[in-house]
Image (cartoon, rainbow, N blue to C red; front, side, top):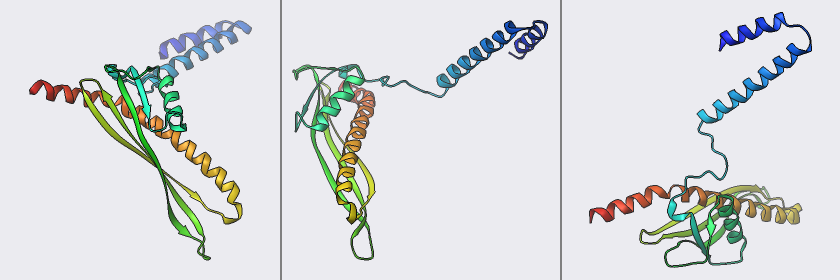
Length: 197
């Protein structure tokens, strides 16, 4: 590589004018592209929609405690982003069942006048993945966020809380996708136990 750079430098010294400047920019651009490619390939970088999902869930039905709720809509969006074919429930089709979601608030600190100063918001989603002839797998994903309470801006805090809930809902569906990607191990374990019987 250094030898090639030296040769290019010698060549550019021999050539004068705009042609040499063009070559420098061309070489520099090519060098940057090569380095960026090597860097992303060596660090384990993956583009979005590249989860190594099990073959059993490449086609998936989704059922929910609230078929038209915000969580169900967001989950379907995530599945489509990862090229999972969403189909109607059937006997031989894997199913993702959203069992429920829950919200809770915990007071973390108070002002001197005993008003709430800081709260922790906890969001939990329960779901079950059913793979035909390979078992049911129950999961729970939980997220928490902290936010400050100001009694003088109650309306603004209400809007902020709604935005926070939506943000956590989106993050929960991403965690569910990551869990689906890890199911290869659980399915293999199930198959191994069945083979030992």
